[in-house]
Image 1 (tube, rainbow, N blue to C red):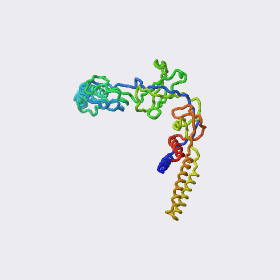
Image 2 (tube, rainbow, N blue to C red):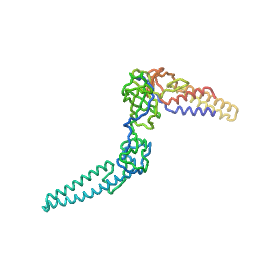
Image 3 (cartoon, helix red, strand yellow):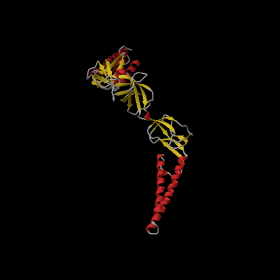
Image 4 (cartoon, one colour):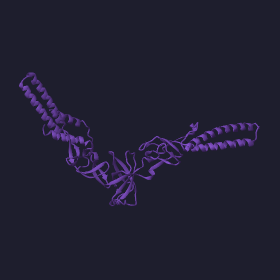
Amino acid sequence: MTKLFFLCAVTLCLYAVEIPIKHAEKRAFGTSVTLNSQIVQLSNAKQSIMSLVGGHIEHYYVKAGQRVAKGDKIVLIESIVVSKMTAEYIANKKQFQAQEQNYRATKKLYDKGMTSMQELNAQSMKKNALLARLNALASQLKTLEINTKNLSEATANFTLYAHSDGVVSEILQPVHSSIKEDTPIISLVKEQAFYLKSFLPLEYASKVHIGQKIVLRHNGRNIISHVTQILPKVDSATQRIVLLSNIEEATQNLYINAYVPATLYFNATKSYVAVEKSALSFFQNEWVVFMPTEASHDEHEEDDHGTHDDHEDHSGHDHEDHTGHDHDTAHEEHTKNAHDDHEEHQDDAIPYTLRVVEIITEDESFVALKGLREGEAYVSDKSYYVKSMLLKSSLGGHGH
């Protein structure tokens, strides 16, 4: 009895799952070929972040393998050059402010006729010379991403920032090392710059064209790329045509130089009856698609009603003689009949059947099949629940 109750509970759980149903439809398919591909990045996808000034590396804000965004801090450098530039800027700013006061005072005297035009021009030239020097220093400090508006005292600290999004590939200079101007400090790999380098057999040379789709299966999902280049030379080692296809979407955990399988889809030429790939199931060494059947709802209700009546009749006999042997016999017969009725109902109540099919061709989402007609309903997903129902129904039919 315990085994029966367990089987009933599992079956009820399976019936509680909502099984999606769709209809087979005709779709256009092209031929496809599986390729051996390599994840690569073009040379312009990599960059070295270099220091614009010489100095001493004090601290790194990033580590190898870390993703960074444009404007993130990369490294702190202590630089004598920066110290001199900021000190000179502050000194020139103070001189300019003083000279501007001198010019205004001279202008007032000139307006009152108490000084000459020559003196006014001399003060103006001094002011303009200081302003030119100040603007030049401000421009240089802006190149180093030092904000002169907040600069109140000289500093030797120079922070280098990321100029684009990417992943830190390598730290090139150790902490506390001395570097010169234009020394590479960090190697950065730009994001959204992955390519597939695929190797195509020569027999497909006349079929491949720019723009055709190559699909890489990665981490349980399809990553789409399109052919952007067909290189004019075959690969000397494999004697195959080399295709480059750009990966157009954001991806994670793609490793440069890794070899992966991918599928090239040629232009669609023929139409077949097709279902979604998630509908396919491998059952008893054959490819099958599960299909809904008409459930016996009336029989189910009739069985339930009959069981209820039997329970009421049994209650009446129990009232007449609740201690006699007839009651025990009736109870055993009722339990056996309920068990047999459940097994019979379970076999009849499975509202699904299976259809053995033959795969013709496929694309990244659909598969063309032989053995289905257009418009037929099929289980489009969660077929493993249906498979479990059929298996448990088969086991239940052999008795316990």
